[in-house]
Length: 92
Image 1 (spheres, rainbow, N blue to C red):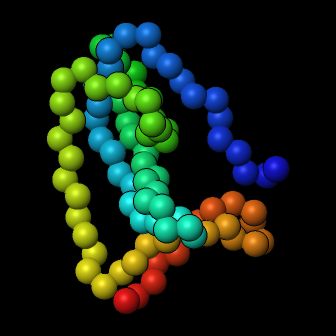
Image 2: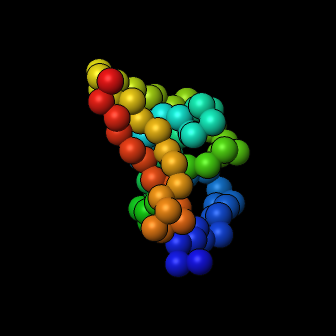
């Protein structure tokens, strides 16, 4: 298809977790869905970024601040024109 993800990158040494942003909502079936992007840097200052997926290991801690937008329900559904899941905010 036109839309596809690249292969996961596995970095062999510890790297610095720089930042993360994304959306938490639900799928069409009601299950919780997280779509997160993160940036990392190695000891030489090279940066890497992409989707933050299940299985990423944390050496010590990650500090996360979550913000809620009141009155908005976020859910993902397959866009019939593109054939990929997209977020659709709904005012409640």
